[in-house]
Amino acid sequence: MVFDVTTLHGRRADQRFNRMVVGDIMERLTWSEPDRTALVGWAGAFASPEFERLSYRDADAAANRVAHALRAEGLERGDRVLLYCENSIEAVVLLFGIAKAGLIAVPVNPNLAPDVLAWVIEHVGVRFAVVDGEFGARVTEVLDAAGLRVGVTIPIGGPPIADSRAFADWIAGMPDTEVEVDLHADDIWSLVFTSGTTAMPKASMTSHTYSYMSAFSYAMSLTRGLEYERGLVMCTFLPILYHCGHNSTILPALLSGGTMVLGRRPDTAGLAAAITREHVTAVWAGSPSWVQKLADTALDHDEYDLTSLTVAMFSWGAARPDMGERLRRACGDRVHMLEVFGQTESMSCYRFWPDRHPDKFEQSLHGVNHVGTPNPLLAADIIDADGQSLRGRPGEPGEAVYRSPVLTAGYYKDESATAQAFRDGWFHSGDSCAYDEDGMQIMVDRYKDIVKSGGENISSLRVESVLAAHPDIERVAVIGVPDPDWGERVTAVVSLRENSAPDTAELIAFARARLAGHEAPKQIVIVDQMPETVGGKIMKYKLREQIASTTDASRT
Image 1 (cartoon, rainbow, N blue to C red):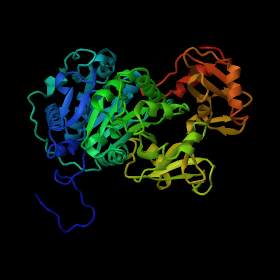
Image 2: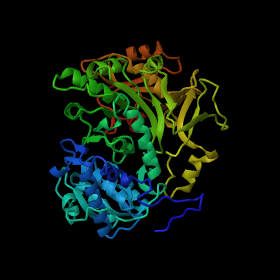
Image 3: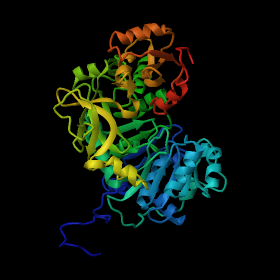
Image 4: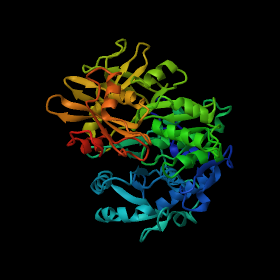
């Protein structure tokens, strides 16, 4: 081994004793608390019993076996591995094994349309595929057409796919020692696809630095209220493999020396039971509606005990006025709500603690969507169309822009989109924000969700926050529908609470009493169920497609 003790610039820490890479996280814990529980799978989130509960020692050994198994398949450093999977402990171990082997994880949403999946496989050059058993019939035709076979099946929801091996059998007998490969913090270890509505998604390049520093920033928030950081017990039942959620849940738990409890899919009762049994201290709930459901479930069923919770983390939309009060009734006074505001390309994002700013949270319940301040790793500004800062100009909307070590390295094989996103030395988020009088940030809207009506730009979030306060409304999404006179018509799509049947005129009057005339919805459409992601985020583009040709306010 050669030691460079003269060069002061351009150095590269790529040896196991000094590097900062995702695959080393659990290994380093084996030197301090090897028998501490690292990963817990709730019922349905593991295929083999040995993966239900793993210590740091066992989890790291399993990830090493994965790394050796991948190399045995002939894969070389930088090759791409497709994960067509929902949450499972095996899939988490697979992620770490991919990172250890110097390969690139390509997790994708199993609900991708076949043509999009085919494009993804070709775009990134997938060499190997791991698929959940339940998706075998869905994916094999696309893989066959791409000349790609299923190498490994995680047999959850279905048996091993033809000509593939079950995950546990695949790694059995493989060495549990580290794979020797030079890796650096700036190397890419994962390609995570952004959501697309009218075009193909973009592959956000995730470096080890991104994941490490994102996890550390979240760990600082998620361990609040604990006596010691290793007491963190993180839990989620939301999809975190093919989104960026592993950076804000699994990795913070492990970097803290704590425990990660993972559910297969959204299940409020299952989540409440997991919190009760595992004494969970922090939960990633996704949308405010899931926070509300968790609190309501616990208050309605005596067998659930949520008093271990200290942090309930959420994002994605309007909250009902009683959410905080019901959460405290269910969990006790130790729990604090944490709203985060970011995106796949920038997870070192804003933090908003409602209990620290109760006046601003109250405003959020009435249409002013406070997102707080950037975390210490994030330099953030709001700029106008000319690129000038809007700091000191409260209430004037512009685009949020960022600088941070926790930013995407770019969009894989898309130089023009990357250059556009990073123009003028900042990452451009595509989110419209404004400063308040105290210099804190307000989320106005996603630019694509702003309703442009009669020459006015209308925040869908503001209108949603107002309507969410109506006692009969369960969920609400505001969209712009093409209108020959106004350009777009402000349209509110709502689902109702059980045993509620308000008149649409009444709902419009409720909004008009609390909003400016141009902001109030001109149309209310009542639906039985919202199109949403498994994490509870309403898919507005699907609503636009469904509602665009509808001109009345009938039940659909």
